[in-house]
Image (cartoon, rainbow, N blue to C red):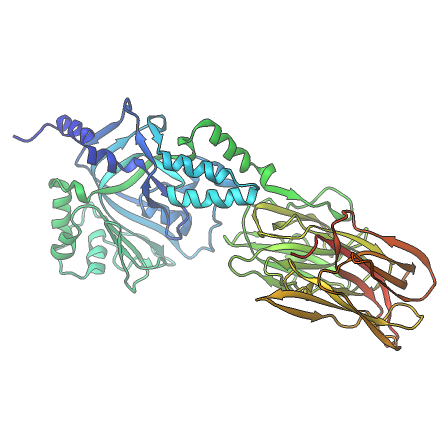
Length: 605
């Protein structure tokens, strides 16, 4: 005599193997490009007094669902609801919704679901496993925001982002793709029973779900059978889960469906539909949840540099699309200045352009590869316009000058202690970018960086130069030699050698000579461990007359002309040294240095 359904349910709940493998005890990670996947680690266990609902059933459900985009389609294809309908979680600030790709037809998913169990539970009935709690505690012990977030990313990649609470367990057959132009999904598996067929899996699934010829296919081809994937050249995504898959391939759809409905094949059953889920963070003790929420709060993740240019309320916000990585920066510019800007993010979202660029062709772009991000931004500006821009990657690559090559604008360096650039806030009109403010994200940063400060002498409308591109490795780069015109004249022939260590060897990079006035040339070499800690001299308006450098070893070098007003510069912190130079110079045949910006930085490592 077969057991009654309630007896079977009680027996299942009491069996240790069933409790261990209960689908709601494993977290689901959302980081995979193919959609949600179950993590191998058990993240929770049932409380002894938990009240769970497990209903045995033998229903067959047919559903046609039309996702809004490919990202949503991948969730629905695997039995999950649309990501937009899932509960919000602290991580949402770091994983904003993927922007829909350009329309390529109508996405549709047809699923046949065999219900064998319906499981429902409350998150309060679950206890987080000790190893999961300990992993979170260790991650939160890191010293700074980016290291904590980086460690937590690893934790949740291992344990999952969400935990399913209400699921259907059984078997399913699904296919998902995009309908081509003027196509519609016809037929219905509820009225169509195909004849048994041979082992051609693609034809079987097409016939079984009555979708042959409907899809202009999009997804990478694969069939999933009990978490094993087999690749095919056809680019529609097919999905077979639960039941006895060998019956399907050997005997066809009818035999597989009969076995899934009528035979107790529970070892092969899988979660085929998720109706309700909760953030995995909800399993943690209250004090850990509070720490994570504070860590991932907007005010802790996003910071802003002071704005430069026209002083007015921002017309656009560099953080308006959420916290995400930059893939490309597009710049509209001419010889007079920067006209507009836009940011393309890794999820295809686009911020800008905001004025001129809406109706004019893009001039330049700065492209970032995978794992690259912007750590610095040079801006030359006046009170009414942004004259020029340059960007620096975490790889030390410096972009070209965008905008005016000759400018009256003052320079400013936007950075945030190695944090990654999120975007630019600012203002514009129909012709120019008027204001800029860098917006930073603290969850991504370089491991080591040098704190900087600047001081500028001279005012000029002249050709710009920036020595940042000659630093090599900015972390250990130092000024090792300076060449200069040695006659008693204005500063010209200024040429700096920057040296850095690479694989145990010292590598040297020399800048062009700044200022082309003729005259005798001399050079000054700094010893290992010797750094410039003070700069004195004379300047007046658009002329740098004299420079005098003082090192931590007490050595000095003075050159130039005794004219103009005296200046005396020291770094804001006593342990800082002269890192590199920005400036302006006349570029004609009788050129000389007109303005210098001294960039102080922490000593080289």
